[in-house]
Image (cartoon, rainbow over all chains, first blue to last red; front, side):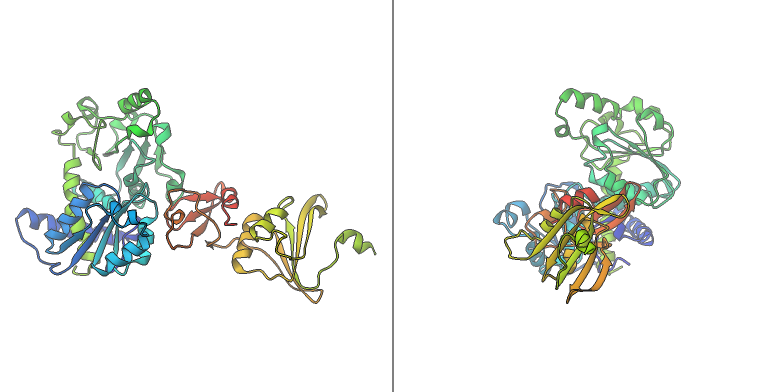
Length: 306
Length: 158
């Protein structure tokens, strides 16, 4: 049961609840595409506090709340207001939670969402904490896989790119390893999946580090590609080399299974060539649009209307 | 008496004896207990004294001192095999080995500089003990990062 709970870490969500969210998200997706106007959350208020820039996460949370008939209060630049006056997260969240029924927060420090949930009088949704967790992104990623394959188990999944700083993959690997999936980790040496993430996973026997993308190209069902940030490299020649071996163009895609999919939490830079966008295997824009329906489901379950 | 030769230092009347400290760690024990010598406490210190057949150990005796839970936790992290003797009227009233707790609260600082507990938030650090192939690990309740016992020793709040 998600009712009344905060969502800080993907471990906070029971497997049954994940499937409940999928069902409800599908229902909302159908209703919205038919043009139905929903009013389930009429009179409910969501506060969004983004201490770090966000486009998709913020827009999709706000869209989700509006789609359900609720309203949103927000600070356009949380960082430049209360935080710059030296206010603690604890005080900011006490105030924001007294003005709303649910709070969404993104913060550059790891653990900020956990702390916020301890001081908030209403449920807190983690919209990303530093390089920590991003659980709602993970649920929408799983939903996208589930929509395509009808299951989230028994798949061969390759996580490609920046596995060190990319928080979406830290949540995703935890969730995927709950089910029987073969997980391949493909990243440059300096951007490998952190030990603290791997050691937190009980079932590690299906996780493999793979040095060459080519080795799994014709085997994987899902390629989850993340952005490799230029600023992580001291030498731009190193960046150029790395990006070459971890990027997707039509030639790469042609060596993939017909049924495979490419996902990306976006924004993408050089990892996926725009020529791939029109291929049926490119699912990243569907994935981004699923963000609204999945967040609608999460919000309405937490607020107890479903 | 032969005993005196072995003891080197007189028995204490009231206080605590921390025995079986890892050799060379006695000063660290005093440091985490925030005993500097300027506080007027009577402290005896033995370092690298023979113990058992081959080993050595450190011993610290602190007069008129009681240990709080978080002090015991700190000692357990500095020297996991230390034993505590509670002395009253020259007699050992209680004797036990320290235990690294399953949850370490308010004793260590997170080594992740970007962890929210390292900012000015009104929060107490909490770590959960985990065992792994490379020995004990301590996972931060807030940022989820892990620290080894060696890292933890360096991060004890002093």
